[in-house]
Image (cartoon, rainbow, N blue to C red; front, top):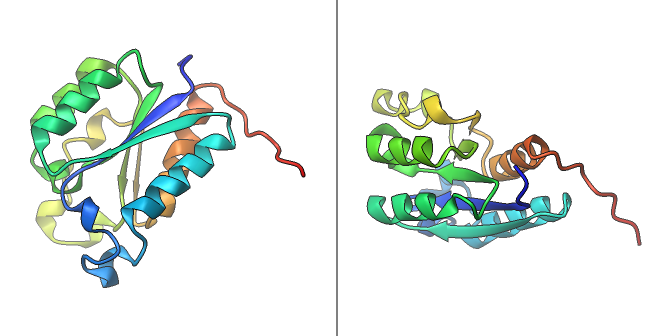
Length: 154
């Protein structure tokens, strides 16, 4: 990976973070998630582009556009984790490292959430770490790309 930019993709219902079932997903908003990802990337001298859609085809289009533009993808596919072979195929096709992120531990929830089509093509899967999972994902991809954390003084 030579590009110093990551694509942060959020799937269905993640636009409702902060108000949707806060007992499960917390009170931080999608804007908070995006700020955390940007702050983490900046520690490596990297940038992020953040996008969210409730539409599978839109997510696939953005995955396709990432090739040649971004060094990797952080993806919270939401419920598409459990249903979308099309998103999995798109990730495989672009040949970029992807880290799958879930705010909750999908393995401790309903049985239908235990399987993810995305996990098999991801370099890492983070679940149950809340919004901090995005920081871990950015850190992992930046380090895979050869980045080292920069010391900030001042």
